Length: 226
Image (cartoon, rainbow, N blue to C red):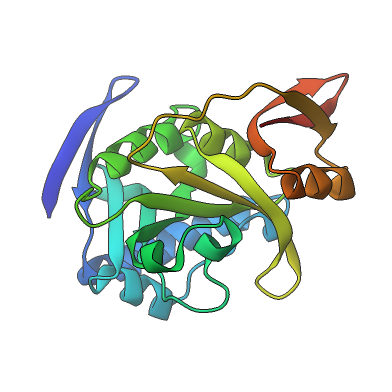
């Protein structure tokens, strides 16, 4: 394994490694633990053995966090197939640039190690591994009201460029980030309830982008700007 970072979870040392094909059994074991602990199983789309193999076989990057030789968290980037469902098309990325898009894929943290900000730590580490000579954009999808994942994307500076059905009629926010540009400057702002799908879709048609989120009176809102 190649160690790319290390640190402490409280007083417990950890290392971050680049994962390879032989790690698939460990990945599947951890993913099963995470899925079993979810109150809403629909918030996570688990990866199959074939999907793990595809990413690890030179179609992306996967990092893992280890404590005492045990995999306790992992995060993946995927170099996607260019097809009709490519997220770059939903973000108005030019056709000739689609080959320079990476997806932020699955991120799992063992329930036993939550509360240490591991998802955010892994995001920073894996984004630093991206070869900017090969890739210009990051895209991702998140289910509405999956608050931890939405916070994760916004914290990295990703923007909502779409809200539509993907993956067999599942409603998803579509996020993107241009890795070579600063965050755009906006002059107009609106905030809509996260549950107001139609209103958000209309703003997106009018060239607004979702820039952050906030909670008010027990309800979640998305801030849109253009």
